[in-house]
Image 1 (cartoon, rainbow, N blue to C red):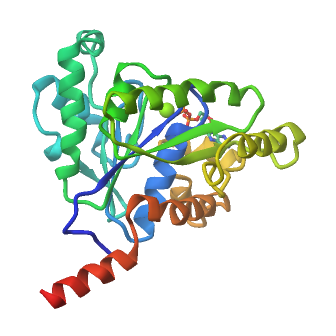
Image 2: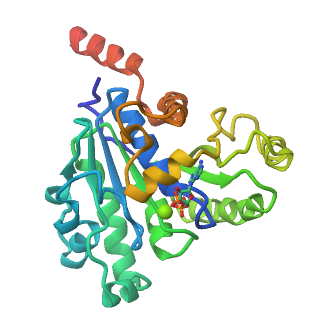
Length: 276
Ligand SMILES: Nc1ncnc2c1ncn2[C@@H]1O[C@H](COP(=O)(O)OP(=O)(O)O)[C@@H](O)[C@H]1O
Ligand SMILES: [Mg+2]
């Protein structure tokens, strides 16, 4: 499957709170999309980020996104391949004090925005971007230059309190001209044996327009802890991936239409080519 004739959509994974599972969702969703046959680039914009460190053997010594930003260069040649053919990684690279400080300046925000936008010239089907917690300058630049947004929320009553701020941020960015669409709100760390967790899921579904919260909910499962300690998707743990890995195959299948990843598109493209 491929979408050679169109540029890839950029999907940003975001949330107001830290520790809700953005990185877990980004890495496992990217992996499942790649396993399902799409050519995926996962890019890490979190200066504390660890995506890719174990996905690619060379990642630790390699440069990444913030090195490209510092030099105002295209990051294309810094993209690393992984053990899974369809999955490539752009790591954060080195972010020092000076660069971190400059991230709040208009000049650097503009450069970062341009860099994110230009990722779509890289030959792949979809780009998944992990963001830092909160709606600081990096996250705002990423969101403003993305095509789709997936908000991650923790399925707990307190977790849901952060939702209004992220919704307001998305509204404000749209008012300033951002063109993204919301692919959905994904609920993470759902405890099926805890009533508070299940009622948080129900409340969020009721509070948001139909279809906003994804059908697929991600359970709390210790396999994610083990995988994230290694910086890898759960599907890459051992020879027999845990059940938890299947949830992301389901989430990938659910989100594909909103990411323009449909075989029907391919068929339509082929038909157009035949008719040309
Ligand atoms: N569904 C889950 N079940 C159990 N632990 C999880 C789950 N999702 C994330 N975690 C763990 O929670 C911690 C924070 O997750 P992470 O993805 O790093 O969040 P964020 O990127 O939003 O800060 C990590 O240790 C991760 O392994
Ligand atoms: Mg993270």
